[in-house]
Amino acid sequence: MRARDLLSAFPTLSLDTPVIEAARLLAEQDLPGLIVVDDRGLPFSILPGTQVLRLAVPGYCQDDPALARVIDEQHADRFLDALAGRTVREALPPEPRELPVADPGATVLELAAMMARTHSPLVAIVDEDRLLGAVTLQALLDRVTGL
Amino acid sequence: MRARDLLSAFPTLSLDTPVIEAARLLAEQDLPGLIVVDDRGLPFSILPGTQVLRLAVPGYCQDDPALARVIDEQHADRFLDALAGRTVREALPPEPRELPVADPGATVLELAAMMARTHSPLVAIVDEDRLLGAVTLQALLDRVTGL
Image (cartoon, rainbow over all chains, first blue to last red):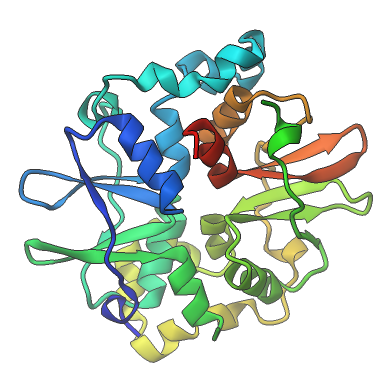
């Protein structure tokens, strides 16, 4: 069993996509994360769902979630408003992360090792210069547990 | 909006659950992670899905996923066999991780900050000495994006 047997189409975002649309896509399609592609359509960043939140949550709250308690409920409910007008390009962290990307010949063990190492529930599958889709943690587990 | 408005029941595992059952539960119920409880029924460990893989993937493959390529496809397909007979207690990493746990009064911003910080797509909700359930990233995103 190889990546090519497990992959499926996966929606992508460009660097110019508004972050709020990225959050909506994640919610609406129940995705485990997002793939941001560059001008050539190749993965530029792969964001696990929890890291999409990182784009919206103020840094001081991430350092100490208890500090988030000083924000009242009404404002807390609307924390995504902070993203208004910002693009994915503006919101991505400056330091590049290790990209969970594999070729179609990767085995399930390679894919699992990459997910474990990068904390990413999806791996983008790239063949030469083309994004073929992604293998999700669920697809991988379904197959290796024999579902 | 508070954690109590967003939480739902969530299956739990004990420390004596075989790891392979944990992997199956994750796959079968499409869960974003697992809650391991202690003898009192309180969260002992909360494992994002990708960290359940960590229990099964050999350390040298996690350090360098390319090394996984030396394992042939047939053996790679069966990498979960390494878990046979092991319990969750035996498989958990020795160093304790920061637990994504909040009380029912936590705001969505507190929950989001905790998910971002701990890379966990679920937060266990505990009231005094009782586990009430969990808030998932999907449930949180659905509400804050107005779905």
